[in-house]
Each structure stands twice: as structure tokens, then as C-alpha cells.
Amino acid sequence: ERHEEQRRHDEEMCMLTERVERLKQLEALNGTLHSQVEALSVDVTRLQHTCDDSQAAWEESEGKRVACEREAEACRKEVEAYQQESAKCRVECQSEIEKRVAEKEREFVCKRDACEKEVEILRGSSVVCE
Image (tube, one colour):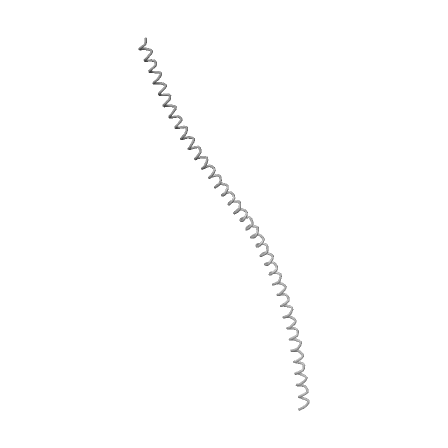
């Protein structure tokens, strides 16, 4: 009986020793996992800052893009207005040039006719003189 009791006691001690060793392993593993969680938490925080910075940079560039698009649209409208004004001016200028040319042609015709009449008069008076 004493021998049996010693054997059970030895088995219990062996099991307890195994449990203590297993507990130590689990505690070591728990410490390792805790360290990894802390490291991952630091990485997540760093990535969140990077993400926030990227988001801010994107929003800034998006704002600049929108402003450039607005400026380009305003410029396009200004160019269209200029082209319309330029076409209008060309038509008006062409019309004015044509009026002036016609006026000068009339003046020329009138002067030419007057000169021709004067030449005829002078020719007529020179015939009288001969």
C-alpha cells in the first residue's frame, strides 16, 4: 500500500511538474504574443498616420486639380469670347474698309471726270486760240 501510494504521489508530482512546465511555456508564449501585439499596435498607429498624411495630400492635390479645371474652363470661355469679338471686329473692319475704298473710288471717279472735263475745256479753248 505504501508503495502504491508512493507511485501515485510520484505520478501526481510528475503531472504537476508537466503542468508547471506547460504553464511556463504558455506564460512565455503569452509574453511573446503580448510583445508582438504591442509592436503591431505601433505599426498600426504609424500606418494610420501615413494613411492620414496620404489622405491629406490627396485632398490637397484634388483641390488643386479642381481649381485648375475651373481656371481652364474660365480661360476657355475667355478665349471663346475673344474669338467671337475678333470675328466681329474683322467683319466690322472689313465693312469699314469696303466703305472707305468705295468712297475713295467715288472721289477718284469724280476727280477723274472733273479732270477730263477740264481737259476738254482746255482743248476746246486751245482750238479757239489757234
